[in-house]
Amino acid sequence: MRFDKYTVFKDLNFKLKKGSMTALLGPNGTGKTTLINILMNMLTPSAGTFKFADAVRLGYVPQFRNIDAEYPLSIEAFIGLNAPVIKNSATKQAIKKQLEETNLYQIRNTRMGEASGGQKQRAYLAQALLDNPNVIILDEATASLDPMAKDELMKLIKHLNGKHKITVLFVTHDVSLARKYMQNYLYLNHGQIEQGEMSQFKEAYE
Image (spheres, rainbow, N blue to C red):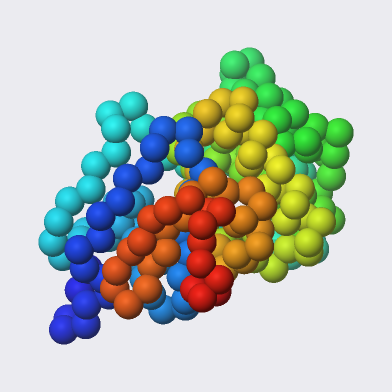
């Protein structure tokens, strides 16, 4: 990928296995966000190609974005923003399912503005799950969360991976969290990428 005369990265070559959990690691400014934007078809690479398997349905969970305390929608209504405006019984059932899947059903009537950071981030995850993805990109989704909320979110991601075989690509700077929950890593630095098992990630990279 090039921007004018600046090459962000070149000769990247990697595969994500179905049902795998992979951390995308690397220093700031190495092109992790650029790579994610390419995978989501928001950017076209300057050269080369990539391809998802035909059956891939992509979900995306962004970095934590705080919501104003006065934000009026309930957690349930917020998740429903990713569904048709006219909600039939099947849609309502799908929303209920994701509320239960993300452990938000008991607090579904809580206003998003009053929810904790972890609850808000799980609501973003539930929104993404409404599209029934089998690949989820977590784009620094645990940044700005407290340690307990990080663990809650990642335990949930691990559960979804185990139960539904959802492939996970987790962009993060938190190597210890990646070690705890991810199986594999992609390390992006100096315009190149390295792939391996998370247990073998070298301390020198951190």
